[in-house]
Length: 495
Image (cartoon, rainbow, N blue to C red; front, side, top):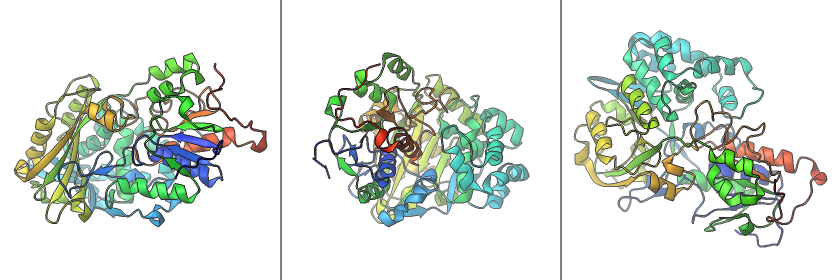
């Protein structure tokens, strides 16, 4: 796949996660000569599926369930099904168990979901119905950097609610614990304390996604998404070099532009003197936020949930009440481990028979922990699962745990175990990795960043890479022949 011609590339991309691949596809489809360099033996970043426990049990090492992947405004233009991707939709998106009563179920039907919320049914309909009338337009405006929205009234309606701290939104919108728990489970994906502004945003985005399409998994594992993106990239003429670890700019082939699908720390380290000191200092202040501890299980039976309806969901939010989930979010933000953690669990094998041998299953679960934590959270995760699925431990035939250091070794972008590309609080939600009019550019006109550490942030949707690719196209190639042709990756302007 490697094109060995000297000075053959217009753009070199460092890193082949979904954002690096998306940027590569966008630029290659513009007719540019694009080359991706990846340190691992396969492309995909966190999109990897491996037999972590026993032969025949295929576990998603990183991302598992993909609501924003299926609904990604950019992925929807690529027709990835043509390149071998098959989405498998669960009957419902989310189940949120509560003690002593049926689980809260988030499903495609807005009415059915509302009816499941008891006295808050009408309030939920009032909140969500306007946001679900044109969900693709809303997602297109949400999953982009700051700028002029295409649907300003719809975005304003979302923004006025999404900007609220989740603890305030829960009090304003709902009366009962069922609806509040559903909001908490979705908002907790932000890995932020619920007193922070904009924590309600994910509490609304994920239900919007669920009411548009049941949250899917990729048949065969999340690696199938990376494989489809790679085929699309190569079909556009792009090339890839695998198993090449880049530590400095001099290792890169000559190109007119370089785009980093890395976290700010790696950008700073690799670029070195090609970026000015003041920019390095700003990158060093980037806040990565809490990390995660994850366990993959091989099971000899489906999870024995108290409420069998939970088996219909691709994703399970094990957080208990709103207050319990909020307490966990606050604890990890303050550097403390929660003894009653919010556990995010996926049960892909319920819907994708390729994940485990016949009659057996996989389980994917993680909890939030302080940045850089090395504590083994297996016992507290299993206790939380057992709380709602007594007898779960009896189904376990093998387990594989990963702490924050394991995640950083698996993917250096997960620095300190942070899987979202960095904290998305108000100081970094729109101005990541630093505050610039074009967040994908750097002070060096040939160097760009397009990872999850740029807007719109974490998630398998490719939108960070897509917008970074647009930035490269406009700034480096938008003036046609007037753009100077650079030939050396080393002789860059030092600011």
